[in-house]
Image 1 (cartoon, helix red, strand yellow):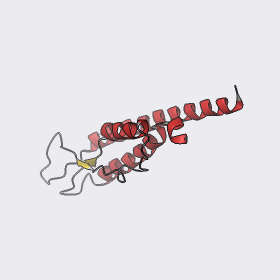
Image 2 (cartoon, rainbow, N blue to C red; image 1 turned 30 degrees about the vertical axis):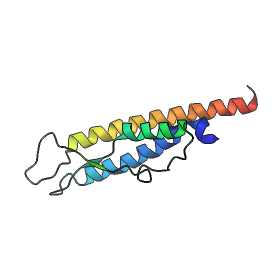
Image 3 (cartoon, rainbow, N blue to C red; image 1 turned 90 degrees about the vertical axis):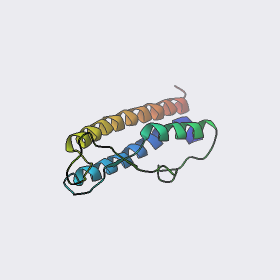
Image 4 (cartoon, rainbow, N blue to C red; image 1 turned 120 degrees about the vertical axis):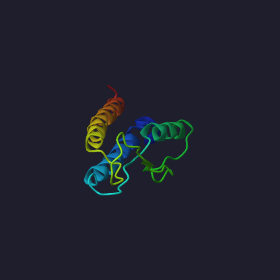
Length: 122
């Protein structure tokens, strides 16, 4: 029942936290020869979650449980050592993910406030 009331927002928060860990791993390995930068397809995963909620299916707690794979990122400029993690790209992705996390948190707070008002009869 809470799944329908809260919608995709709890899953979105978890997915944003998972993505932050992935990007942090990319940042930590910017200078590691041969390291391949990874990421997830946030949009596709959220479409799958929304579909599952709409059709009353149980949704997983994490993207990995849903069978979504980490994708390799194609670099804008190839490095000589085979590393595909680019510092400026990873920093930009991390910052954007952080802002998106805050947005998801705001939406979730609004949903909870609305439920709280409905319970109180306001």
